[in-house]
Image (cartoon, rainbow, N blue to C red; front, side, top):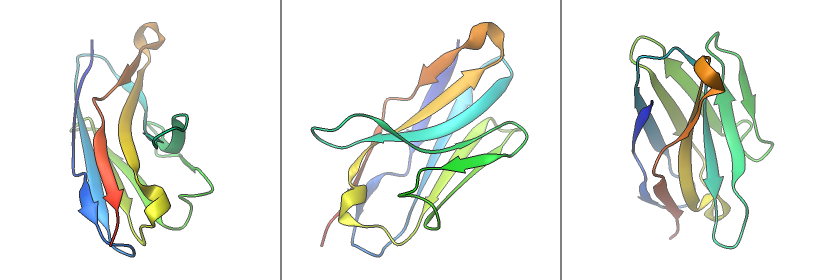
Length: 116
């Protein structure tokens, strides 16, 4: 099993920055770590993902503004979000995939609101 604890969400003005963190507690080796988001009335969508080896992939909307990183020793993934826009407002979910049993785990979500 994997337990995920997210932090870092909140209210920020347009153009501001936030840093999300997600710490995983598990005995399993983690393969991919990523962030997804879901805005009201919309489907959950990928924001960014990073492999265990450090290969990253970003949604077009995040490219150039967001940076995903991970600390394998701490089983923690980060999402640095800069130049935030109102359309970035959503609940952000941490996602972790393990090698064992192709596990796929979700955090509880953290609200990010971009508004003046």
